[in-house]
Amino acid sequence: MIDFLVVTVVFLLISFQPGQSAAASGIRLPPATNVEDAIDAPMVSVAANLILLDGTAVGNTRAIDEARRITPLDELSQALVAKRTVWKQLHPDRPFPGAVVLQLDQDVSSVVVKSLFQTAARAGYPAISFMVQRAP
Image (cartoon, rainbow, N blue to C red; front, side):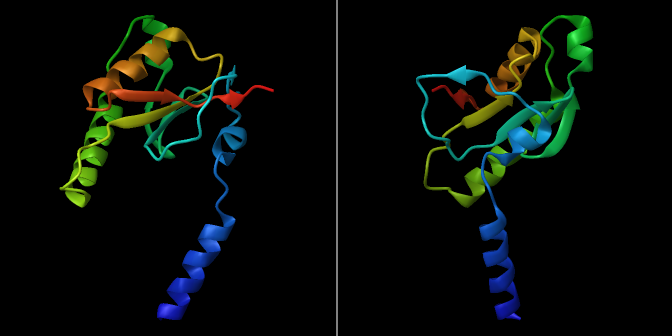
């Protein structure tokens, strides 16, 4: 039984390719010159009006775009708070880093970006980074 689990874990590690989700979902990341390597943090993505947290749907941008005003995203907030709670249970002796990465298409409206930013900050994630494409 243990051999089976080891083989499964090794297969999953070999088949994992970071950064593939942006290309697979059709997200065109904006170019940037002053960039840092990716950090280990929850990733909020917007793909075709769908808001995803680490690949799980947690909302839709359609209502925000139609209202044209900053709107709190309750599902995203609840999911981020749950992730923060789990992190604190797993690391009781370390301070919570409060980092989240936004993976957004370059054409996402500013009101959606502001809504995501505000929701993440209110959920306890003040260190917000944006995923970008490294410019040549």
